[in-house]
Length: 568
Image: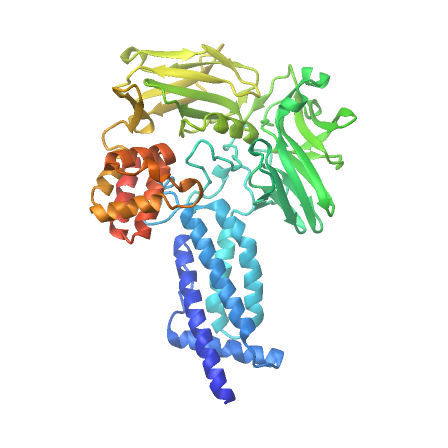
């Protein structure tokens, strides 16, 4: 009877192991991991591993109960399935790097957030594996997954310092109102000599506030060095620590007398230690340390009920280490009147006005500023373009011009703009552009182009005024995203199109489109609605997701290939 029970247990465990390995294989393919020893999927291999695991477990525990092993395999399978689901939700159909057409692009932050869970699972699984060669099949697969995620768990000084052949991208949201990931500065040559002395593990905090204006976060950490994916906050701890923190508006202190002599150069943050003790805290800044910046001119503003004070700090390339670990509201300031270069970013939004009207922001590389702008521009379409390739002098006046002005009527308002910690923008009006055009940014007193991007027909929507005075939006250009999606959906039969619409109205969260917007609509109206709701890349990504749900894999492959050709 004991042998029969053992045979039954080994068969069940072999079945669980087979599904477990199948999911491992799927995850490896998604992450572009090619296992050194392949996948042990044969029934014989599974049976041999299962029998060895049971034998070793019974010897160690002196028990015939193998439920512990079953639970480890089941929980591991669930972990792998959840990771696959998260990665597929964030798959981007655009291939930024020069990779094979069939290689997927995954979200690095999502993958990194799972690494600690895989590490714990690896330790659990290793404890029940036999000391034999069979263990290498599965444990090596897990180790390769952990190593792949850990390649980027250490935060690089800039994303362009990382390997470009790895199938990862930064998390860039497709809607103006939902870009909350930390923006890493470009590979600034001016400050490349400054390197981080420590390695930092990214973490995703929990949201504990309904106030989107000043979102409160919470995280529980063990000993280590960490960086928040949302805010850029870095902390060091030598034991278990629980934190609550938020990024605050500088408006709350703008009336303080000290602000007459100083300007923000980084985040204003409120950090509370709920339990444990922090070894060090680092606030993000957007200063470029290349050149002649005087660190003594950079201070930490400490805000307390009794008033405000200034403290010293130690600057690293993108952060400032606080020297006083008394926590409350603290932020980074730089003395005005000094020549200071800063890391910047540009944001371009198309408004819903009849003629092409763009809002072009030139701002410091500050996540709080970007979130505020995204909220303000939430009804407008974000046009993604590269940021300036080098740091720019703060408080300098810049002018903005569209090239090929003779070919169409255009107007820039205001004529010049000062680079400060603010949400000011250029309004660019272009009346019925018939060709691609460029936007150039120059310092007012220098004939030097510091930013130059092309605005192509496929980048923006053509706003059409209807007879009843309402407007509708359609993307311009031959072979545009709208044309590609239109051609794809026209291949669906009537019932299949109804099913496609049903999925769109039953997706989770912000992906869901209200049924009222899609009922009794023509295909071109559905495409227009999708592009307005998701923007270009998002519309393609969601279409691919729904087509795969519908088992329309061939159509999904055609769409992905056409979109890749369109991007090239």
